[in-house]
Length: 285
Image (cartoon, rainbow, N blue to C red; front, side, top):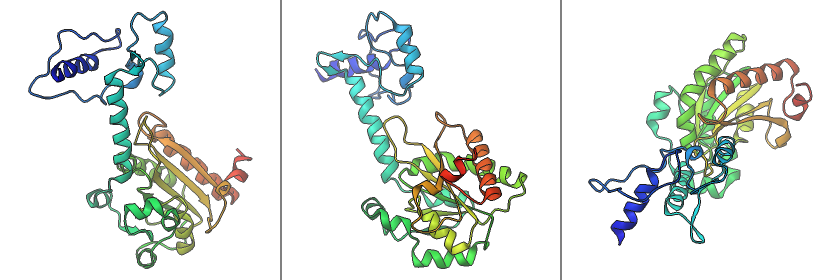
């Protein structure tokens, strides 16, 4: 019975965008199952004998929603349920996985921490993720350029996966773009267990005119690799959310890194020229 169920699931996984899945002639080899997350959701369509398959496929190209998954009686197909569980697991991993020290070293950065002692405290005490530890403050004062025009910070945030997946490609684009505009950049570093508002504490410590923080966003069931760039002009602790600007959804299936980097550079230049950020800056755009 179990073997039969597995064979049916594997058969469903082998279905292509050419039509609905079939359940015949599929076997499991060497106890290995295919990775169900490899196929794009936009190409999966399990509804048999559809009246307007082309229309649904066009819809799926424009939404990450799980459209056209079909059912077995009143329930989802097994393959649909497994894909949901796999995507949920990827989201959990993105939150709970630590950014490896090797990543920070490969980026040529030094690391500091917020007042959170570990990941559990980071998740339960957001306020501590908005403040640097005393050791972090001392390290930043020692190693960073003071009073930079732009201070770039990288943080794990709520998705370590997003941080690792995007920052290595994003940083060269961002640095080259700012330098081409004649903008002086401070000493980039990595903040572990950081929240967006930690940028405010960093700005006060270094006297930065603009702070840009690249941070992993809360993952969902569509992607666990979405990163955002938050920016603020002379941010101070306790400032309102409306005083920041953000470019979100930076990942391979969202806002492309090159486009994101160029947009961040344009925003930073506007902030420096007009000495404002947030909704006040948006009114000038």
